[in-house]
Length: 144
Image (cartoon, rainbow, N blue to C red; front, top):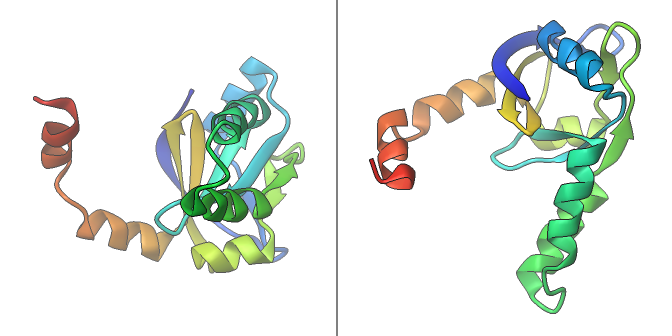
């Protein structure tokens, strides 16, 4: 559903704009509301309401008696906030999520199929430079 990599800056009111391509997808599927929360690897995850419910159901069945499950759920759900972008596709990322992802001004917004990720541009570039090669990852997970 969401694909591609786009660079956007926060405006002077600390708003970010959703890429036009993503706004088109939202219009096509009637998506108005999202949930954003702490992502992995120092980014912000953004889910449609339907996808949020799907993810929530997965986490509900995990045993809360396990410390790792409790820790993850606390960070994931306590960081969550629902947002509705304005008519221009702008929305505000709460300060605690900007701090978590170290978002300053320049961002990279990427589509990862069922979710959107929002990265500080510098951290995204560091992540890409430090990671394994795309080919090696494919070999490891796809058994190519």
